[in-house]
Image (cartoon, rainbow, N blue to C red; front, side, top):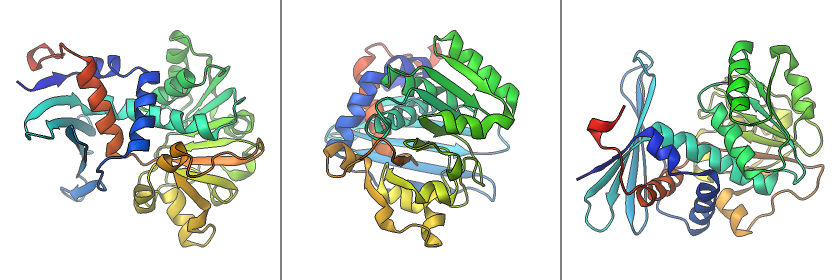
Length: 316
């Protein structure tokens, strides 16, 4: 019987510390991870396939983005036994994506942000933003303040209230207060779908760590050229970033930076093959576009941690 893991089961099986440790080990160890396959279904609709495998599991995430559907983006993860090809489990793909994306950024910040960074600014108030705040707070016990900014002030207020109810020291930033908040933060986490830069390099205080998560296409930008040019850059994977990350591709194409500005990927950083932060005043930047290695890692943890998964008829 194929096991089915609902969103609550996935979240419960992926505590931040254990997930970060597993991701650390997975990036160091490596796996077979081709680039994601993007298939247009129509001028507006798209399907993505994200496969990865190791000696134990083959995992594929199917993502659909259909603007006219009741839920624009849907995702499902299928785990298959590597030795037999037998399907083992189906996991809620959105929960896997939210959890592993946030944990990967927080893991990178452990090595790139200043050790005394105590203020986190989350730029964006959408579906992923709250999970980024939770992950960074869980992996950075010294965090004393979580600022939340959104283009719509009411969305930032609502998210900050939710985080406060969970015990996080969160407060909303007024839409006009973004520049001041950027200057105050030691970690600036951007989780937007912006086409034009939202955070400007001249706003950054010395020693700021930029965590860029939202942009996933050539035409998307969350920070400007000045922010990129002054930063020491690490990416989740070189292949993915150089195929999709507009925040890096656009400056590269215009000669603002060269490929040498990308000092390493996350695997190299965690293996010690490249140096992350070198000084307290240095600006660092982590650009994440997502990799199926993270889905594979999360799926392994969920399958191992949930002896009694939710079956289809029990799912809400």
